Image 1 (cartoon, rainbow, N blue to C red):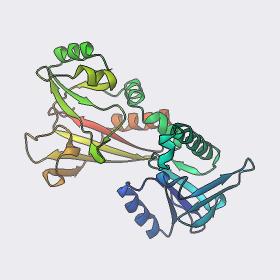
Image 2 (cartoon, one colour):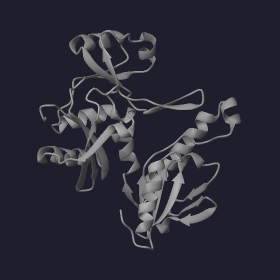
Image 3 (cartoon, rainbow, N blue to C red):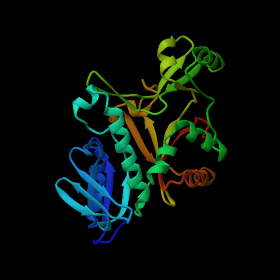
Length: 288
């Protein structure tokens, strides 16, 4: 993703993306000019103009940029635009949001930048069901899985797998009463009561719980893979999801993926049309 001092990188993200600050700091060390575009600011706080001859002009943070200035773009996150309250009151919000999404999608599709990752491929790859189906197709071992909004099917699954986990399909956070809450993977057993109404209106992923020695996070960038083993200092951690634990309770170590697993990572990246991606694995007590 490196560029010459004459090129500029467009970082497409949101104001809540703290990791983007680290990305920008690192790129600037390489004398790379960066424009951060927080998408919730469009259209109220910034402007964009496009024409079929390939001309694009952006006005972000009061500065104007031409498409020729950008050589590459990193599509990290998207966000719901901030819109005037009266749009929600008069029912026009969904129309305006749809127009904004269509404009931005067209802008990404017609740009000739080198993308990390192409936005249309990100939208496909982010679907958990697609991830699981594609991972299984390239030979990854997948825990027994059920995605449903049917309580009867969920209880039948728990009878087959008395120790299981439940996770969200798409969102990792939820806003309730103006506060943001993280949604982590939770343990589940037959003794737990599944709310029939809640599950009916919000489908959920259920998976067999796999005993683990460590979580493995593999980050793939092009042809390179950077892998870490994540372990809890407590042999009986209070959470099954390491992201829910305090960082001081975790141990991070470098890890080497078996060649067959690394090859499947690259194969899946190719299948999904990505150049950057993260894989989460479980290392079992038997070393599998």
